[in-house]
Length: 135
Image 1 (tube, rainbow, N blue to C red):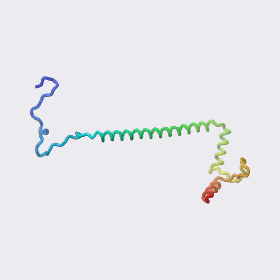
Image 2: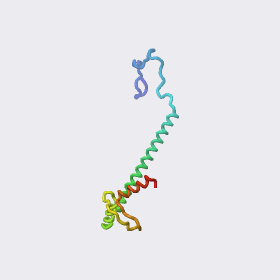
Image 3: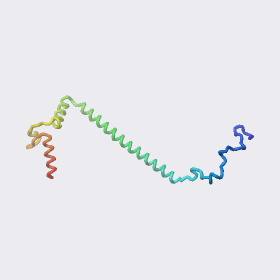
């Protein structure tokens, strides 16, 4: 018995599992006995670069997303801060210019001399026709 209390007792007989016979062949090399440090370093560097790229892309997306939300809130607050008269003018202008509230009449445009106001669908067709003809 050894002189230390925490050292286990040495057994003279080893289990059968530890005995290897001749039919098992030559002993194999231990797993991971020869490490390729260069390959490990390259893989670590590649994973680190990919991780940093993912972080940068995520930060850029988050920044653009929050900026767009901030601008929408500011614009909404600006529109909500309008007086009732300004809201009425805005709504009538949107109705006049939209395809849903289109004016079906021709009229003289008040801002320009000789300019005519026409329905929005007809104006879009004229512009498309001009581009098709190459003018």
